[in-house]
Length: 172
Image (cartoon, rainbow, N blue to C red):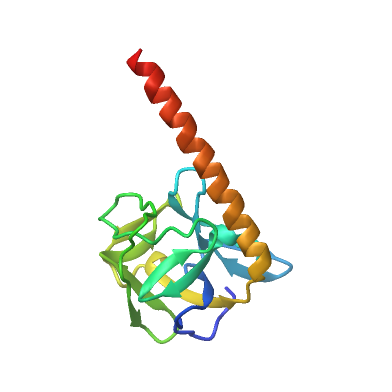
C-alpha cells in the first residue's frame, strides 16, 4: 500500500480521499494505490473506486467550512446512516476527523466506511480498515474545473426540463 504523510485538510483546498484498506487497492507498476471516494455524477451515489488522474473531478473534494464539497458536482458529503448508501446533497454534513497517526477516521453522522461492494456507507468500527482514510492534496486547474462544472450544470438543467415534461405528460 502506498503510504501518505497524514495531511489534515485545510480550508479551500482540494483533496482525493483514499481508503487505507489494502484489500481496496490497485497495483500499478509495483505501487499499490488505495481506492478514492468518488461521486457518481448520474445518481450522486458515493463509492470507492480506483484512483484516476487529477482531472477525474468527481474524485476530488474541496474542504470548505468543515464540509466536503465534490469538485465536479459541487454537491456535499452527506450524513451517513449505518449500512445505507450515501448520496451527496446540496447542504452537506460537517465532518469530524479522528487522527489515528497514519490515517483518519472520518465521521459524517457515522464513520465513513467502504463496504464490500465499495459503496460508501456509515459504520462504527474503528478497527475496520475500510474506515481508515487519508487526504491527498491535489492541485486543480481552475479553468478546466470550471468548464466541467458548467457542463454538469447544463446537463442537470436539461435533465430537470425533461423530468418536468415527463411529469406534465403523466397528468394528461
